[in-house]
Amino acid sequence: MNLKNNQINSMFEFVTSNYNILILDDSKSVNQILTKTFQDKGYNCFNVFTIKDAKEVLLNNEIHYVMLDINLPDGNGYELITLLEKSSVKIFVLTSESDKKFREKSYQKGILDFIVKDKNFFHKLDQITKTIENIEKNRNNTILVMEDSLVIQEQLKDVLENRYYKVQVASDSLRAEQILSEMPVDLILLDLVLKDGNGIDFLRRNNNLLINIKKIPVLVVSGHVNSEITRDVIKEGAVDVLTKPYVLEEIVLKVDLWTDYKRKESEIINSVKSLGLQKIIIEDQKKKLEKQIVLEKQINQQKEKLLMQQSKMATMGTMMENILHQWKQPLSAMSTNVSSVQLQKELDILDDETLNSSLSDMMMVIGHLGNTIDDFSNYLKPDREKVDFTIDDAITQSIILVNSQFRNENIKVIKNSLQVSLLGYKNDFIQSFLNMLNNSKDALMEIDKEERFIFIDMSTTSNNCVEVKIKDNAGGISDDIIDKIFESHFTTKDKFGGTGIGLFMTKEMIEKNMLGKLEVQNVNFDYEGSSYTGAQFTITLPIQ
Image (cartoon, rainbow, N blue to C red; front, side):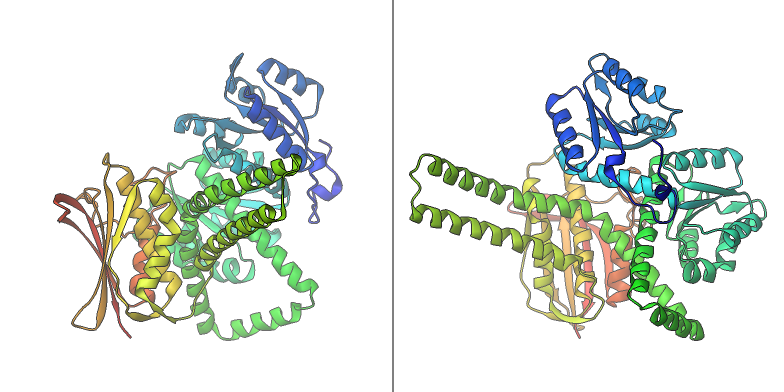
């Protein structure tokens, strides 16, 4: 495509009609739905069902993006990946499988993303269109790769430039600082081992420049990572830590996430400036610089908020699944009601009483859907003020957020009631409790049992505290890892299954934010005549 000038300058405007998309999938229904989805958004689409037809379209048309099914009637879609490896055509792979080696190999060949064709496939189409828009906007973003290995430099440069990022490389901190002084940088990929020193020293030396002045996200990528190093680099301004040998897909996702975050932050700042508030911002920044102690406190609070937001984002997928579960049946009922009214209208047998009754039923369903959204919105509110709340109500709200999925997975929650009020961060407690519920759910999904239980017991103690115990019958936690589960980035899941930040942040929020205590142990117990073993988390909070 011949890019217009406004697509390569800071005033980039994304116009969907400028892009041609080739859809290659042998499923007629999938092909048609993909075509309609993209056409509705303004893209120009070519839809084919075989590799042979795809090659012909590519030969005779300027194609920018390909939606590629791997299993095709006349061959393997990987043939097309290899064919287009050195071209400017970008590929999304549509697959029903999740082979890690194949994914990594394909990312090395320039694949943009893998979209798994599962039950939520058609809900992911918006994700594809947003990715295309963000990739085109990447033309305005510069990534600084600080890495002493020339091989890794080139590998990262190839992957990022394939997503239209502008990439600068530096093997030492001196060259990196020169680049930072000469041009705007939107994100830094930092190896802790550099030719002229330690990456942490670079962070310390440029802390104020990176965090306060240029606000550049820093992703640390290193083969020497432990909890102490993770703590130090986060304190010095890094937003995340990735461990070598890394997975390219993970790096790409993190880079996309933080550049998009910085892009949106810049858009907000520009909007504020356009409203004539630039002077207020400058004065506010001046006051912060004059009060360095206050500034350091704000920076630490910002980092803590970032970690909590990462923890909350880690549960967003589960939250969306629950919304879908809670909406599915009411929407089906509303669809049936509408179809019935339409049929009666066509047969000329629709009377006012039936119409009013049907409309009343649909208004009730709409009210239920609205209440569902309200429940999830209350959870997502960034509440950072201490409030009086009832421990029983907060736990009940947590259960409501996951109840639909628990029902679907045949997980039964048994809890008692305790009307005790606490003063603290209610949303922090809800998020902490959600992390533990989801932790139990993940453990229960790994056992082959018909009966899956989560028990919640609340009580008060003699030293004026409330004690909440949550246990499951998933068999407990292995003795060799039970002492590590609260460590930052420790996880028993694979690299795509979890970040390890959930239980770490849960302990941080309970013990630092709410001055409580969180412990875990394996327990044996009986319920309705049967004996079980499981992990028991105990939260102790002061009653104020």
